[in-house]
Image (cartoon, rainbow, N blue to C red; front, side):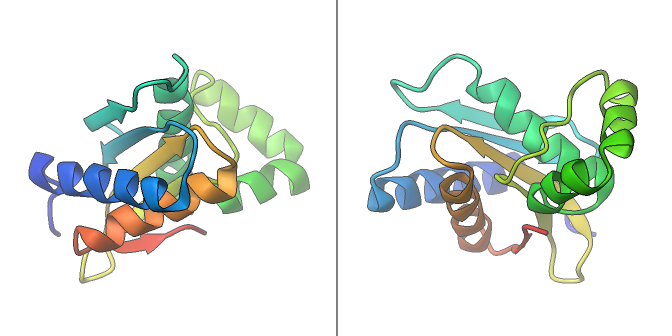
Length: 143
């Protein structure tokens, strides 16, 4: 399994923010977690509101916790609200079930972390996360 290094996390963040600039997105917060849900790196653009870290990390944490991108977690919340209520309880409210949390897979397909982005629409957050992950040489899994 490939580790998700600080250098890789910085590449993900830089490329995600470059994609955001290309798309003219609102100011973002970009969170990169390792496979155990631990923070590797976070960056908040000037003008991004103060909860961007919590929201982005909740998207990434939810993806890691369930093994699918947060787009699928959002569908779970709609289709299985009791499951989501239980997941929220056992995670102490850390899961944010909306798109924008993308699993990071290495070349062997193993999950090495997740990226969570918050600041624009969920679809745009997800697009920036995917661009960042690809630019760092990993495979995105948005669910």
